[in-house]
Length: 224
Image 1 (cartoon, rainbow, N blue to C red):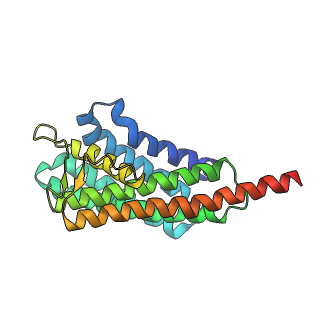
Image 2: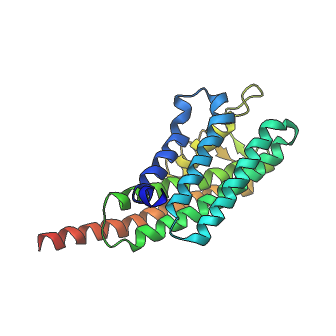
Image 3: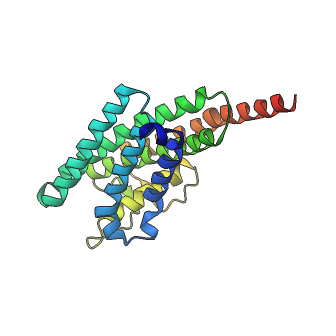
């Protein structure tokens, strides 16, 4: 089964990322944030296991992360009083996952001899994963020190909107658009904003540039 799905690993991983980013446009926000989003992250973890199925040690590491995420998700549904604790564990689990998987995606893209559809999808997935890493950094900071970000449009009636707001902030910062509607106000949140902007730019000017260079060389070889 894994052998049959492996050639489509980047497609599956990328599609699961897209559903995480834009699923709230289809599903009501409360239902999406509380039920659908955790399930989609679990699916993304499964896709990550497929992505690294040739590396047994890392694959089992992801299996452990998947089990932890599943237990945390199930426990959070049953026990509301420990919701903050479960959220912290879930954020740490996802953060570790995206750090490892982004590193491995970059390695696979970097070592690719030919630029094809898989390499392009891997390149895009790596960039999307960086935005998710930034999101988990920001939401962890906000959970630990409430009020670290000014301009978050959340209310007591819709506390789950913090996920949408900080996801948006992470990508806007990484893309260096910076509308200024959400602003970091603490020292730690400001450092996080700098880090998110830097990793996004490093990815574009180094990893993307290398792939473009390989593709240009590939075209020259075909012509010759």
